[in-house]
Length: 157
Image 1 (tube, rainbow, N blue to C red):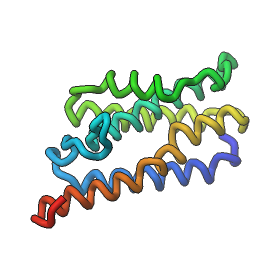
Image 2 (cartoon, rainbow, N blue to C red; image 1 turned 120 degrees about the vertical axis):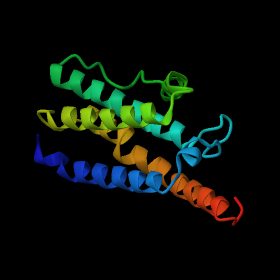
Image 3 (cartoon, one colour; image 1 turned 180 degrees about the horizontal axis):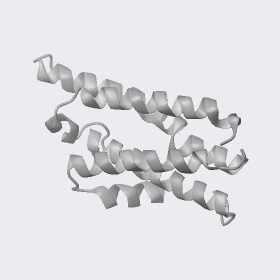
Image 4 (tube, rainbow, N blue to C red; image 1 turned 90 degrees about the vertical axis):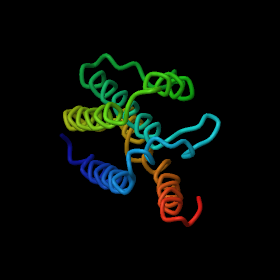
């Protein structure tokens, strides 16, 4: 692995562990409760599944980059993939979604660390599947965890 990605790998780790810390503050029922997003309604399970599927996609793309078969991200339809990924995990129990996300994170880190050198396409997938993607969700996750905890303690929701 190239030294150029060390800061990104550290940032990914910090972001992931913040997500884990927030999730661990919730009960299983709270993780499944809709309200994280609306239209469509998402639960914490859904956002974890969303992050996990993008991590898996990132791993696939890193492997293609390393193999020389990658064709670029210009044709990536983010909204369409989001819909496909959400549907794929719809109705799955928490344990399945959580295991998938953790396995995908392990896989993306392995594929990321195996990249021979930095390039713009790898940088795009680093941002999309990990570091910046976590940042897109962490503030709402933090707020939703606080709402759920407030409701639990009788403080409303």
